[in-house]
Length: 198
Image (cartoon, rainbow, N blue to C red; front, side, top):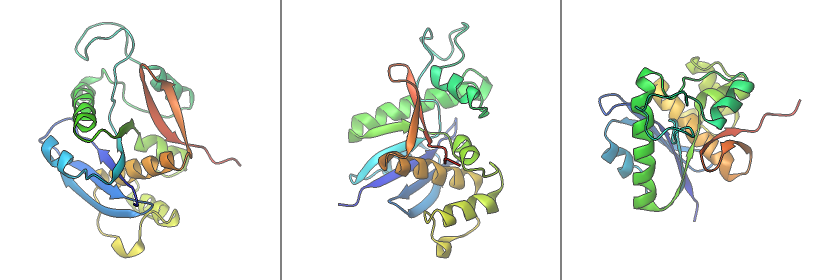
């Protein structure tokens, strides 16, 4: 059996688009949905790993995202900072909704499918490979050069869809053991690609 991965560029609310990418070692399909139920419907029994672009855990010392305390960063977040990779803290405004939804969705996926769900970050993937985060043509060219995206399937992808492709790409690299795990297993980790040695 050829295992699939699913990349999810999750939005904080069901009112906005969530990008979904289904792939093996190449992109099979990319599309947008809105509701949690639609996200779950995109996951089939041959999916091995789901990579979600959203915080999937809370920092030590924080029982909920709404609790007022000084725990704003997880160990994995601090490691991203050390690498000079920019991100929004989980306690910042809209990130609270995204974090809540991400944690809830992860639990639903594990309960329904009993598969591995990893936290990924397209911004880190782009930065590591030297691809501008918001340059759609350069992102598309990168995935074509990586042989992850077939040139014949190119269309006017939205940023949500491209970020979903980046999530699936990172999940695929994770299956190939070409990633690094940042953070603490108990608190929560982020999976990022290994940096190319120069």
